[in-house]
Amino acid sequence: MIDINPKEIYRFLGYRNITPTPEIDERINVCVNKMQKSSSPRCFYRKFSVAAKEPDVTEIAGLSIHSKNLYKNLSGCDYAYMFAATVGIGIDHLIKRGEVESIMDAAIYQAAGAAMIEAYADSEVEKIRNAEDKSGYRLRPRYSPGYGDLPLALQSDFARILDMQKWCGISLTDTLLMVPSKSITAFIGCAKSSALPESDYLAKTINPMEATGLSAKGATGNEMISRKYCNLAQDASEDRHTERGKNLTGSHSCHDCRKAKDCLYRMV
Image 1 (tube, one colour):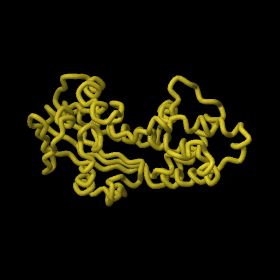
Image 2 (tube, helix red, strand yellow; image 1 turned 120 degrees about the horizontal axis):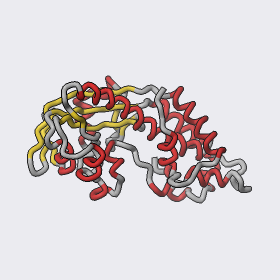
Image 3 (tube, helix red, strand yellow; image 1 turned 180 degrees about the horizontal axis):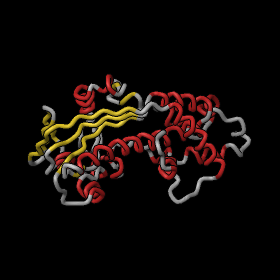
Image 4 (cartoon, helix red, strand yellow; image 1 turned 90 degrees about the vertical axis):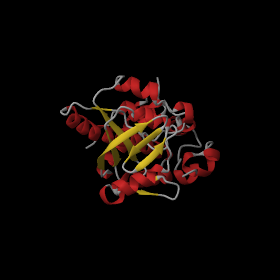
């Protein structure tokens, strides 16, 4: 079982300074229980020598990567891991079912799925951290393709170098999205020392907001949910108390919902 922090689910759902209603909390618990039964977490990683060369070139695993963000992240590192993790295709099946049966459940599965893969990746990275600590190394924050100026095209290199299909069951679409969707790839640097604490290092030196508008947390490989969908669960909850929303299901709401024009689920 993957230990998911409920506050992370609330955050992905858009509850910043608002406490979810007991009804929403119960719905979240039901969805998370289904997810725990449906998840099949797997991860795989390899360790490589790394060389960061000014002004923006990083060499690792036979790759020569041009990225100022990755250069700053791995500068001073002797080694770096190429890391991949997933919580399995079962979560995607729940999301798809939710799109048909309950928009609110679909939003919860999306949010809880993002929190679940983060929690699982963190737990696996912690094992690496403990092993590296014994050798006097410290880990840098995870940094993923697609954030900041790090090309999403590197997903193909991760797939090839880590053989992700074989070891994790992760494949790529033509647009380089990962399947299962709740999956992560990342570089993780190993350095004997670091000029900054990990949290400061992430925020100060690889803030991807400059290039993408995402939060610094996003640089760890999180699948960020767009702000315009943040209140989807709250809106669905409100709709349940209206005449229009009494029998709201995915099949009806996709045509009638006030968010239909730019609904998240119409875009996948």
